[in-house]
Structures are given as structure tokens and as C-alpha cells.
Length: 633
Image (cartoon, rainbow, N blue to C red; front, side, top):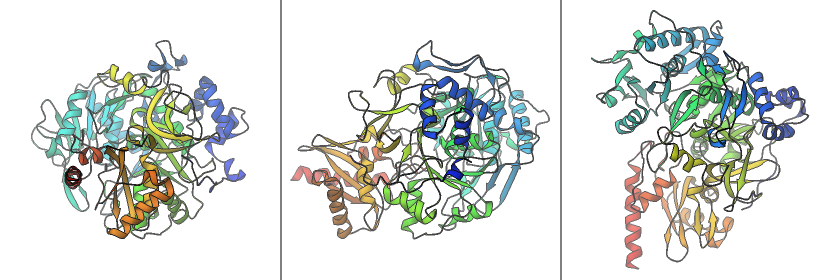
């Protein structure tokens, strides 16, 4: 597979480059170029990570004695050994005397709340004291099932401050999904809200999880008998300072939103999580103290805690919004950026594709950098964001990692020249692409791996260390296997083609779904698409495309011809289906494996993250009809 649009479309000038955080780090290490810094970070790991701790001003109550300890094997590496710190202290209590804004929240009705660091510390300290008074002990797990509101952030920080472990859950989950995570994590207390508004409608949350055995709700608004009152807890008379936690003690458990098997509880510790997230936000987004970061996400997705911890840990401002991005109109995000002077905006390719299809051409004011993650870009949408919404000037910080590392293996930055839809190698992440035989390959699609252990990698899977080794360390011995289908070149650029287990094999040739979708999405009238392979007696798998946009035979023919033109006739799609919408998570990820399994009449697995389950009935019907027609041929 060859990347055809390889020209540089964004190149930072020397004057700007010398103002970036990553350039400043290079100078502190007496390194002459950013390219050399990346090489240094992979080879001189101890010196690099020590410099990150210092430059990001991570505060330890007790200094660590060893940066990296690998005596138990690479898979069980410990970081910042013997150090004492607290993630919450580094984001809140450290700045308790500051009146600068820590959180800005806007609601659908345009109400606006601004919370200073001083106010945030007071609320978090009192809530942490309340939790301690309940008998919460070090290491206890406490759930958060709330929309993206200030109370959710206060809950997260207060849990971590008192030495307990925060377990955020996606606000769109149903009762079964929440209960599964509660039982897996042994949760006794759950933060939630009585209700909140989304698209102008009341969303009942507390009622959906009441009565789960062994769990007491801490409810913001709508408290009922047996619940604890959030507002009383936040104004508790006592104040608790941050517990001194060992670097390797857990701070957060995040559940992966896989489509098969039991959800995995990934365990993230105080030291590695704090250091790596601050590194990423500071250098990948070039985040400064006066910046306001808004990422369209949810606390239950990795990017929620990541963006909050990053912005607050660097003493900037996190902007949050619990409503729908197209309510009451499609330009809501533009309006919020203008009203609040947001400087960094995290969005998804799906958001751009949808707004492009709706004809929105408005430029963003105040934005100095776009950011994105969650799904691969197609060339057309990346260029539309860069040229139309960014005026061909604003860099796109495309990052890719995962819940399991609460961070990023790949990231393009404002300090690196950009090619359309590109990523760049992660700083200090020692990434590569391997072929099936485990050999490193360039300009060839293979498997994304990390050759080193990194600070924010999960410390196992909750209750199942065997599954941890099998999931991440068994495919390529000594390498973390991320599960992404990727290509890299010798300049340090990477391009993603979707999940490796979604790769389609046609007549012995492998193609990533994103490469097909890139071609389909370039067709006039197509908004977005999902490509998958279904069993075929001749070719092994037949390419099947589901798309949204204009219906009709003309569009179907155009899609077929475009794919044949771009990829060759051997990859001509056998089936093309029009959909009103594609199954995806609320964060915008298209659930290709769910689409495929539903179409084939198989068990789609874990559906807790899906935004609209009703779409699956149409896909199931399409699959049944297709198989019946095939059997009758």
C-alpha cells in the first residue's frame, strides 16, 4: 500500500518552532533538532523521562530512587520507583492559591460555570474528606457515572486525592453495562446525577442504576431515600489534603469498549499516568498555561480523563460541554469556541465529515491547534479540516493510542511538518511496524508495536494477568502489540488503516478497511462509510461497504468505480448498502466488527458502548436477505 498524498502541507517556520514546548525540551537536553530528540528519547530512556518530569514540573512528595525497574521482566516494569506523589495533587492542590480558571462548563441552554483552581481545591478537599469519613480506604474503587459536568471532575479528583481508585463510566451506558463494571471493580459507591439535558430532553441517570446490590449512590440532584446527597458531600465541614501515594499505586481504572468478550479493566497508576499525560498534552498539543482545551468526549472514554488531567496538570483550563454538538444547530461548536475563546479543539473525523456534508464552511476563530483521535482519517476530511476550517494554517495534532495506555503511541504536533492524515512517532514510545514474521518494515503495512515499556501502560488487566500477557505481549515476544494496522516511513511518519483484526483478506491480499473507506468517502454525496469483509467461497472474503449520504444507483455505481480505480479491480466491492446512520460509539468510533458480526447473524459481543442499537436490526435484515439470495443462486 502506498501513501499517494505524501506532500508536506504544513511546515512550522523557525520563529514559531523555537517557541514550542518540545523545542524547549530539546534545548534543555542540548539536542539540536526535534528529530534528534525523538531518537534520544528512545535510546536514552532514563535521562529523557527524568527531563520530562522536571520540565513538566511533576511534584513528588518523596523523590523516586530509580526511573525504570525491569527486574521482573519488561511486561511488569515499574516506573519512578519508591517515589511518592498524587495525581490529584499535581492537577488541583498544587495550584490551590490560584484564581485562574481550572474548569469552564457550558450547558445546552448556554449557562456557563467557571471554577477557579482555588475553588476547585476547596470542593475536592471537602469531597475527599467526606469520602474518607464514609470509611473509604486506600485502594478502594469508586465509580463515576455522570455526564461531562464539573461534578464529574470534582468526583474524579476527590477519589484520587483520598487514595481511592476512580472508575469512570461512559454516560450513555445502560444498567447492565454499569452493573458489569461495578461488580468487576468491587465498587460500593457510585457518583451519578438525577438527570441532565441532552438535545433538550431530560436524561434520567440515577433511576437507571438504582437498586444494584451493594451499591450506594452519591447523587447530584434528585436524591432519593438511601442515596447520599452530592451537594452536602461537596460542602463537607472537613478538608483533606492529598494522600502520599506510591508511584505504582492505582489511581484510575478504565474499561476498554471492545466488541467481543468481557470488557477489560485497565489499571493506571499515579506516577506513570501523571508523567505521560502531562508529557503528551504539553508537547503534542503545545499546551501553554493560558490555553483552553476542549475535547469532544466523555469521562468514560480515555480522552476525558486525559484532556482534564493534561490541562489542569499544566495549570491551564479544561472546557467541558455535556450536550449534543449539533444542538440547537450544527454550528454549536463554532459558537462555543467563539464565546469561550477556546484555543485547542479535539474532534473526530466523523464530526468533520458530517459538518462538511451539511455544508458548514465557517472557519474557527481563536483555535491555534486542532487535535483528533479515535479513528483513522481519510484524506478528503483531513484536508477539509485543514483548508476550510483551519484556513490552511492551523496544525492538526493527530494522536493515536488507547485506553490500555491512557496515552498515545503516535502523534503529529505543531512542531512537525504535516502530511495529510499523518501521525508522527510518539515521543519516548519507541514504536515500530512489524510484519507477520516480526521483522521491522518500512512503506509496508503491518502491525503497530512498542519495543519498550512506557510509563502509562496498564499494570495488568483487573483480575486477569494471564489475559494481560495474551492481549499485549504474546504476539511479538518483547513487544507491546497495540492491535493497529499501520504503515511507517523512514522520516518517522505513520499512517493508520484500522484495527488489525478488521483487516480484509481478498484472494490472499490484505487491505485495511480505512483504505477502502478513504476511497468511498471521496465519492460525491457520501458522508462516511464502513468497510468489512464477509466470507466468500472464491476470494476468501468479499468487500462489503455500508455508507451514509445520497442513496440511489448512481451513487452505488460511483462507489464501485472509485474503489476499483483507487485499489484495483481485485478489490471491487461485492455488496454496497446505504444506511441512514452507521453504528458507532458516542465518541464517534465506527463499530466495524459489530457491523460485520450482525450482518453475518453472529453474536456481536459487547454492545455497551453503542450509541444507537436500533441500527443493528436493519443490518441484520440486510445480511439475512443477502445470504438467502446467495443460497438460492
